[in-house]
Amino acid sequence: MLLIYNCVRPEPGDPGFEEAVARVNAFADECRRRGVWVEGKPLQPESTATTVSVRDGRTLITDGPFAETHEHLGGFYLFDCRNLDEALELAALCPMAEEGSIEVRPVVGIPGVSHAPVDAAAPAE
Image (tube, rainbow, N blue to C red; front, side):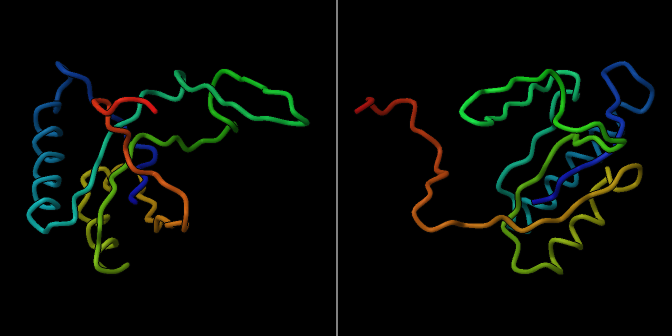
């Protein structure tokens, strides 16, 4: 997984918006061409975050991210890479690496834990 930190996302109408979109699309197309693409999405700003924790059986809900930090998580890409070297190469190709930073972290598969998407068309049991 590539976690994207501290990049400024231009909005439609901002100078450079079309160029930024074209560069991100070219990067996604290259990842698809290589056959590693699984998913990628930007996140809403951290001001939209809500943090949930449970302590001593009590649910605590806090507006905002968990911790005050200078870094903010802006989005992610999930790839199925052959190895760490390929993931690092793709991180360096990611356009957001030029202004922010890309954390490369392996995803762990836990036996018996299902993270498969739920089929919305399937009847509930």
